[in-house]
Amino acid sequence: MTRAVPAPARQHSGFTLLELLAAITIVGLVLAVAVPASVRFYESIQYRQAVRDVVTALASARYRAINTGRAQDVSVDPGKNTLEWNGERTELPDGFNVAVHSARELNRDRIGVIRFYPEGGSSGGGVDMERADGSGVRVSVDWLVGRVSQETYAAD
Image (cartoon, rainbow, N blue to C red; front, side, top):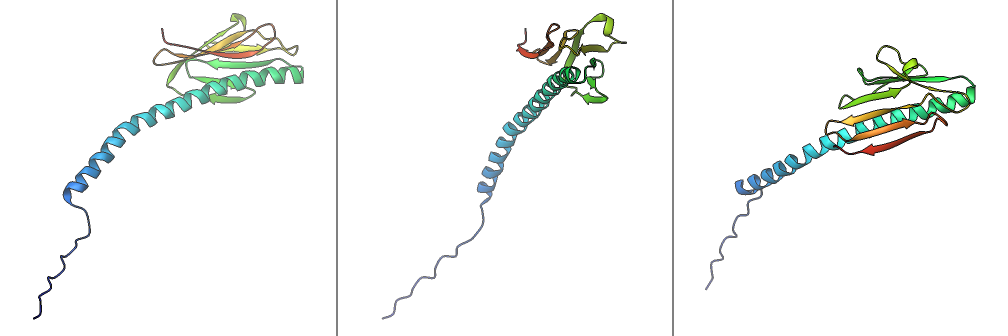
């Protein structure tokens, strides 16, 4: 007596519609969280780079004034968010407000000027860089020794 062997069940490869919908939903949720976080991360990188640019320009001007024996000026235009020193212009991002504090007698048409002298001193002053939420960084230049320092401040 021979027995009939049942035919093996056919196996289908691929995904069901339910599995595809679940995968698409998960990807959508991940993107909904990741995109805003990456935008904030990019803005934070721009902000930190702008602060570094300002600190570097001011410290470099001081160093050059001491080494060359000639005064060096750093010009900050808060209206255009630019910083100029030694013929080089640095564009600061538009995402925050820039304010400059400097000696009145050095300023030119809404442009603040911080001057570094060959003996190491400066005219003093500083640059405030504030984010839209009110937090920011104050880059200060000591008038006596020309030291450049920075401090953060929180929103009021």
